Image: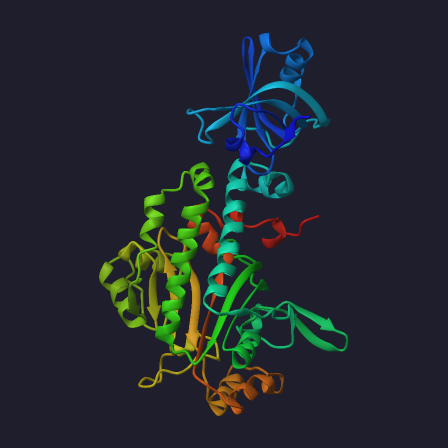
Length: 434
């Protein structure tokens, strides 16, 4: 009986006859040889059918099989130095499992709208395969990193009764007879966890009710949000850069095949593992923009847009921390600067190559009276935040935290042009999946 294997394990079966369940992605023929491009969810490689070595029925089936039909194929694994994968299978048998008639995503180039409307099928493509495998590696490495650093995972609720970021970005719903909102962030709950366990993190979906058609923004995305007790901002920045370097190195080490599919320059990625990352103040960032001559309207107090973030990160050719933003443009929970009333102790990590902010973080305010005043100033109902103020009333400590947007970070690591390539389904954009 033939051994059934996965394509990714072909290297362990050179010279052996095996069986694999596959889908056909493309085909071509050259006289008495048919070349079938095959995938099975673990990798892509080529099946070769030589007319003189198989029955007439097998060769006829190789010529007529259609794109995305499912098959069982049998054959012998060979090394193939010309292939990026390194191996191929010379087929001796083909068994059709499932039909595929008029598959809508042909090998030709399609527009973005068409592909997003067929996202459930687009996931099968080679580039999408590579991005999703890298996404999986980033998730795996995230758990490894935080477990190694002594964090525990705390799951924050998805339905919440309060807003950490701003009331204009909330999706409203009813929780029985009370107002509730889809979570913007698990941060406030992670702060409660940090006061109980020291170092915690959450990893889950978050939602922003702002309509956007830029390549950087999503309505639904996944966030990694660590919170750390007895920790000031500089220590938090060290954790952040170590985490990013760990993610990038893990992708380099474990996703060579996928990076090759995406033609991602590994030497560029290696640069992003070199620590420490540069640090500049918001004041210095504004000065850099003004001196560049490209941003004549840059003024202190403005939030940075995509062009400004791109310029700053490219100036250093690696991720750069911008420290201590104006209080007026940051959320209510950030700790005020000890010597300045106009800025808070905060930092955004800007990625190079035009990808912008991938981490936002701060040291958290610890004075309950200050926080209460900030909550009222933000137009929030302070009764909804009494539990949050309790964290300051009962054994408060210096603490810091940050959030990494998973999809944007993956878009940067993979070098994809648009954040859409990093998300599983189109409901994550401004559309609803049927």
